[in-house]
Length: 242
Image 1 (cartoon, rainbow, N blue to C red):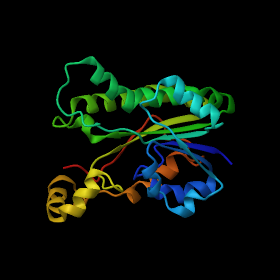
Image 2 (spheres, rainbow, N blue to C red):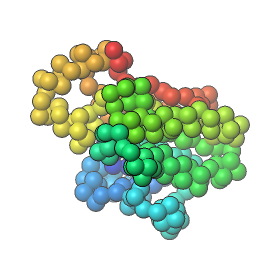
Image 3 (tube, rainbow, N blue to C red):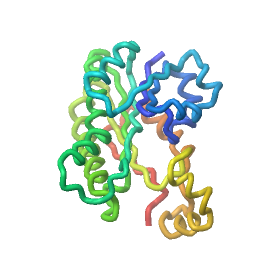
Image 4 (cartoon, rainbow, N blue to C red):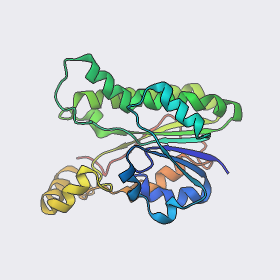
């Protein structure tokens, strides 16, 4: 049984995948807030194949690695679903704000990948999946967030060339408007359903908002041994932005 590390195991897109994951993998799933554990169904939380690890990306690099070592985490497969604007919308003139955005959307991901990738090379197997956003191409979105995700996408393309020969396949799913459990888009669908429906008709060719279940099949494929040829791809799963 292979080991799957999910950074951001309580995120909305990941929740529908967990039931399938714990049947096929030894799953290590991180979370940052205790209350977010309620997003995971009790039956899954009790699975003997699931280890929950409290981990906050605001911690120092050394502390993050210490936690992974203490929990004896192994990772043949990594899914990293942590990211966001973190409330940074306007252009920041201080470098620390840029550094924070890059840290939370890329460098902490890289820290964890680098910790495990040597063993993946040794074992001649690895699957790494990251998440980006249509914000990269949208001039109206947060500049720090879009720049960080563009950084991440370029890493996926370049690192896949370096590590593909070791059967380590590194890919990225690029999303658009998704109402995953308890995120702002989900809340908007509950509070302003008509406005959201009208917005989707104008914005997405499928004319509906995305949901977490739209991602389960492609995530399952990309991280599995069945995937032997998808590598360095920015897989756009966005409902067809108009």
